[in-house]
Image 1 (tube, rainbow, N blue to C red):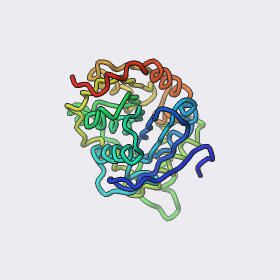
Image 2: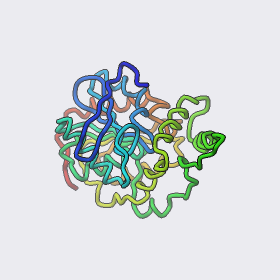
Image 3: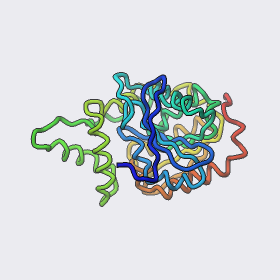
Image 4: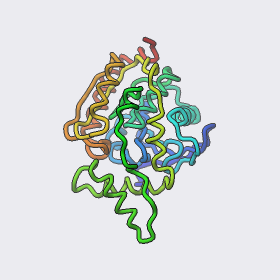
Length: 275
């Protein structure tokens, strides 16, 4: 159930039916979730950021309550978010992407840099041949075989629990719920990351904040590689942050994001540059 403070909507876009939630007023800030999550990943962060901004958190196409799709790819995701901006009449936005959401943000900044004022990239790797070659093979975290007795639910919980803070079953519960919505497509987002090619797509020269979380075993060591390719980027580290950083430590994230957006308000005329 959605709390009364949030305003849920649907938009019929050229890329399909998109569900999004918003709150607040002012300059628009778009939030893009990781896989296999939904807008709900930002439910604790949104009220903090919406004190000064209009915060919009969509379910990326193929996730949450947005339209399901057969063809998961970073390019497909980026196209759907750009289509949503068109439908909402938003010429330019600030954008925060977490993990998968950050990769989508890079693709958007490559295609339509003039649509983005500033980027916040959290736990976002540089997805090149080295990344694709060295990415460790993992047992599918979000895909389990259905069992008549419901044991698959416990298996799903246990597989993911090592990436989540202890004594936070509420966060794992939200994760499991989002996975169940995806059914047999729960791993398609990870496959989309593995096949994406970011080479030649980091020419955006507007203000960028990159956030690394020290207890994220998958993404933390990858973040500096992206920073190297965005010379204007500012790197901030959150100690003890884990994979669910957006909901684990929302106050810390909100403080970094708000400070960055406030300090760069005069610098966003540099958006859309080329190297």
